[in-house]
Image: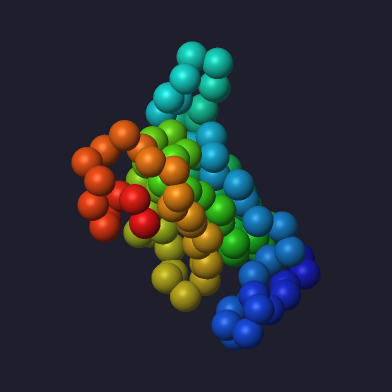
Length: 101
């Protein structure tokens, strides 16, 4: 696996990130999301291959992706993984600083 510095942050991330958009409960009938068990298996394999850069967002599965990634990360060494997340879209929740970025 090739690692690159993430800007000037000093963080080294794998050149292939793990897109976590399908992790967690499906939020639309057309989506076939991975349940937590399968998502964790995928993350384990990604980590075994040397991956350390996880891409998620609050809108992926209406927050379910971040929850699945979080439960997996709880069992991992914290200094080994970098999580990229984003917040932008209104998720239909009460608007406050914690849910609209």
